[in-house]
Length: 289
Image (cartoon, rainbow, N blue to C red):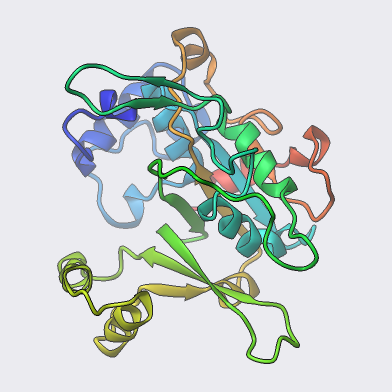
């Protein structure tokens, strides 16, 4: 369904900046519009930085459902980053472990099936938080589907990355909890070099994920990020999640501001996660760029 929003593929930076100015003129995300003085087109460097709330506003304006999730050190919610992202990529939620459970699948002659998620991004985010390991291991819920999954947009103050996957590293003797490494694309890395190494790895029948990552590390390409290292250095981390559901026109027009408990989830170590725990201060996070 998202293909109908982006028929020509990923928009350019100029196109994104132009759309941001359009939505600001229509009263969407006014707070951040004021920060940028309502102009973004042509800006580069730090003056052009945008964050998760602006990205939420951009998708909402185009009619794509999304939710902002913030992980704070002050309430220990930041400790759940690894488990949350692992649950997302392992599709550990719902009876079939996936966002497309109970979805409406539209099939048109000569075209691939279009999956319409039944859960909103907010509902799916809450389910991911409430999916806990069984007996210290992985969740018993497993996905049997092969539907495409959007990457996650993850941000902390001054930088952002695209998370394309996650690797769990278990201790050899089982004496400590497993750790996680994010598989990510970092805008500080040269895209052409990263793409070249990935293409070679995929083309080789003998390649494994470990061998590809080892080769990239030897070439000084950073493609992994330790979650422990990430959270130890941050007071706050924000993440944008989307199931790819398309908003109806009335809901799209209502989304003028990212509201806590409606469009934003604040991570908590309390279970089950309820609307009370999802509320937080989106004003503070909107300024992280």
